[in-house]
Image 1: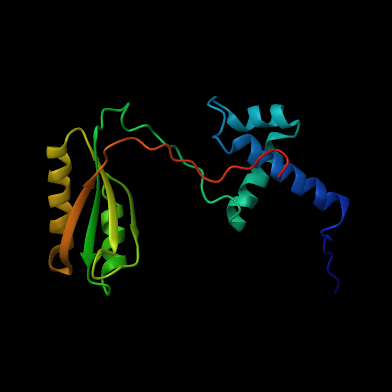
Image 2: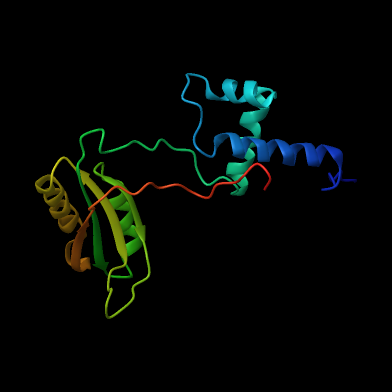
Length: 174
């Protein structure tokens, strides 16, 4: 039995690595906003759309790309109140409860973070968006009811200004 292993210095490997790099450069600010974005990338990169999709899937699978997702501007959609709710949840139950909180349709993201006692006892964070603060407060009460006696305390930190969020960016020469 023999195995064929593609050496990292083989020309084919270098071509794939170069294409992957070009795909990242072309998509790091987002996929083209057209009905068939991979066809547009194929045109830009002079490569078959099926190959572009295959390489993106490979980079997702091995973790070089973390995710592909829509990032709506919630302000333009009318959601003007934004509250990061922070919760002190029993460590033995935080993962299961965090999954339930994260599944709520009004929670845009939910994650566990380490506590920093005594100043910061919170270990569960859930971002809530609403049309106004009253709506956010109602949603916070829903989360509190869901967490029940597993929650010892919570706070809501409201946004004061919009911060532009971007991930790491590569330059063409990197």
